[in-house]
Image 1: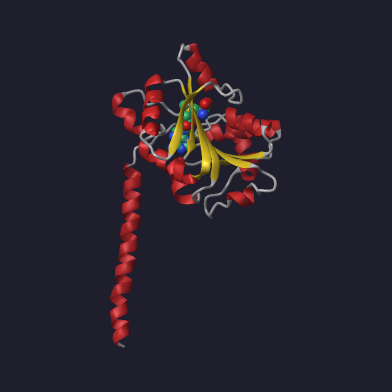
Image 2: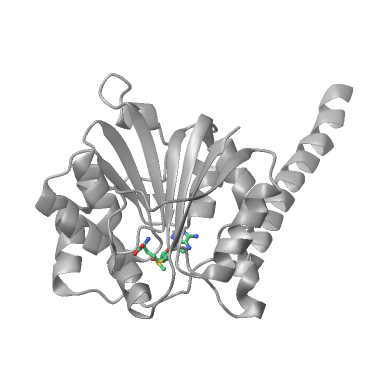
Length: 247
Ligand SMILES: C[S@@+](CC[C@H](N)C(=O)[O-])C[C@H]1O[C@@H](n2cnc3c(N)ncnc32)[C@H](O)[C@@H]1O
């Protein structure tokens, strides 16, 4: 009897604590500065057609734990690569097409971009590519177990050029450590940017991290030219490629 009396308030306190933790997490999510601009979800007919027709085949649902090894079995795929911010899917679909022995996951928050990726992936007939239409922060923190990826590709992350927007840049010191946690030992990150001040900030954030070694590299021949990069080149922007390996 006395045990029951003692347990009841404790249970109640635990429930309250769990509720409080959830509320705190939701609050910090609400106030987290997004690394993307919330654009409209307006799609072309072809993009919405591709979503209707192919999303189910390519999408990884987030309502259950993601088992990447089940999706990309070790006997079939030599590595698993995640592209963050795949945009219109030009790089992910092309790289996946050219490397059928590796598994690719493209994460993009902008739904029309996912539609565009599905059109390309379907036209190329790629079987080794999956997509997630969500914010990468949430995906990595809530759905992906540690040491999951062999590589990350981050091509032309939004540069957020204005000083007051710098906090929105994806490749912050904190996010770099999240990437380290989700990479397997020796895993790589390939980055490209056409915004020189951002390239400098990326270099400085990685040099301050004990988790990585690397720096500026020649443009890798395997990195396809995207429309976004081409636009930058048209404005005479200099493109910097960087590569880091997990220590
Ligand atoms: C400048 S575009 C570059 C797109 C593509 N990588 C390319 O080279 O053409 C950056 C992309 O990153 C996406 N993005 C930014 N922050 C993101 C996040 N937190 N999660 C998922 N995607 C994100 C944006 O929606 C946008 O499509």
